[in-house]
Length: 416
Image (cartoon, rainbow, N blue to C red; front, top):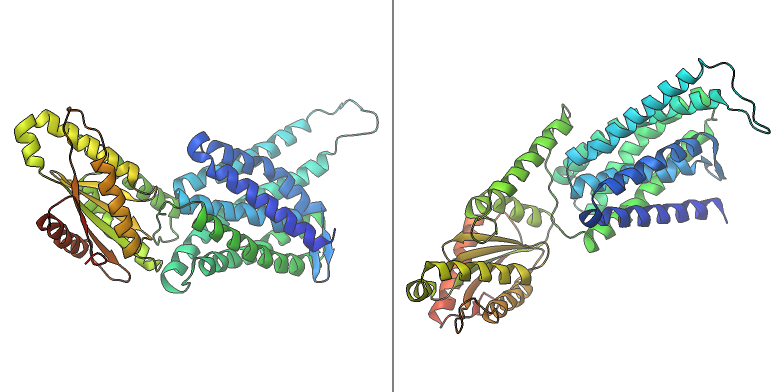
C-alpha cells in the first residue's frame, strides 16, 4: 500500500467511526465521543513524533496529518451541532490529563531501584519527551479550537459563500498555524528534519479538503437539525459562547406552552427571526405554516373547556408527529399553531401542510364521536431579508382564505 493511499484510508476510517460515535450521542450521551477523542490522544502524539511516511513532497506523519487534523474537525463538528460549552470540556480534560501524566512521571524518578524485567527496561526519558509534546500539543489544540470557531464564524458572514469553503478555509488557516508551532516543539524535542514541516503542511491542506468534504456530506445528509452560530470576539470566547448556549437553553425550558408541550409564542418571537435569517443566509428556502383548529369555540361551548384542552393536546401531538425532525412547532395563541420549516420550498411546504391536515383529521379524540380538523395557510421565503412578522401576515392571509373556502383545507400560493 502506498503512503498516500494509507493516509486517505486512515482518514476515511477515522471520520466514519468518529461521526458514527458522534451521531449516537442522542441515544448514549456525548461522553462516549469525548472518551474516544481522549483515548486517541497518546497514539496521535506518539505517531506525530516517531512515525513518518516518505512522500515525494516530504515527510508525513499520520498522527499529525490524519489524527490531529481529524480531531480538530471533530471539535468544529461538536461546536456546529452542540455549543462552545461542550467543546471546551474535552479540551480542558486533555490538558489536565496530560499535565497529570507529566507530574506522575516526574514522581516516579524519586524511586531509584526499579525492578529489572527481561528484555525490556522502562524508558522514562521517552516518557518525559512524550509528556512535553502532549502538553504542548494540547495547549496548541486549545488555541486552535478558539481560532477555528472564530474564523468559521467570521467567514460565514463575510467571505465564504458555501459550507465547504467556510469549513475548508477555517481548517486550512488553523492547521497552517498548528503545523508551524507543533513542528517547532517536535524539532526541539525529537530533532525532526525540516522536510517534515513542509511535507506535513501539504498533507494537512489535503486533509483539510478531505475532512471538509466529508463534514459537509455528514451535515447535509445525516445531521439535519439547525445549528446555532454567531460571531464572537476573541476575548473569553468560550465564556461568551457558553452564555449564549445557556440563554437559549433557558428559553427552551421557560418557553414551553404548559398545556400542549409545544414552544409558546414568547419563544416564537425570540427565535423565529434567527431561524428565518439562518436559512436564507444558507441560500435555502424557509416556509411558515399558520394552523388553526376549526370551530374550536363550538367544542368548548358544547363539551366544556376540559375537553377543549384535551383537543388542543391531541392536535399538538398530531402536528408534532407529522412534522419533519428539524421543524419547529409553536402554540401561537388560543387554538392557533405556527410551524417554521427550514430548507422547505413552497411546493413541498404545501405537501407537508396537507400531511398535517390529514394527521389531525384522522386523530382519535378523547370524547366518543368527537373529531376536529384544521385549516392551514402557507407562505415561503426564498431570499431575504424577510421579517417573521411579514411571513406571519402572509400565512394568515392564506389561512383566512382556507376558512372562507370551507375549512379543513390548505391554502398557499402554490394551491392558488
